[in-house]
Length: 234
Image (cartoon, rainbow, N blue to C red):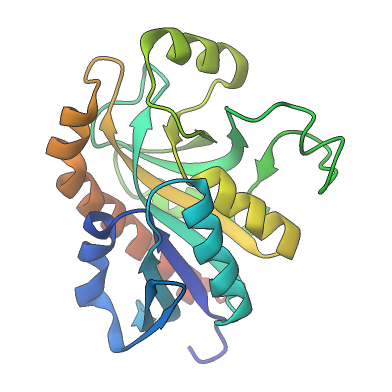
């Protein structure tokens, strides 16, 4: 559908991007800021995909380049995350409806640039509607709040974050991508599958489960892109 606008697809790591690469048709590769951008088509949607590297600044750099250089009209953040809500289990998938930083003071974004009405970045209703359509067809997919911060989650920190934000998942990039999209007025959504939980904590669980979770996130993201193509709503 040539009328569809271009989608930017950001993964944090190479393991999360890897499952997408065989699905990119007519792929061309370009480089900018030490990043490699894969441009082509997935599920009938024009895309530019890359892995940004871990952490908020790396993800923000990638997001801004996608907007400025590749003129994307929406960003999809796909990959893995840690489960926060007790009901979220290993290899479940969370699709964002709201995103916040858990390691940034509340007034930083509300009292100063960009003077947000709250600490939450809200996902556009049309994007959520597409996500609901996808989640209704697939098991173990949940829509809800994500939080971002550059800390590994210990039990005490988990309790504080859950009490304040009640998130389904946590990661180190989603908030910064949502932030870049907010100031550029670009649509955004995140699709992240769970590698670790309160019952399965630690870097060893992330490493053991990352490849499988990345494939799950890829499958659901492809469903999301396919639904976008069918609706042609961007």
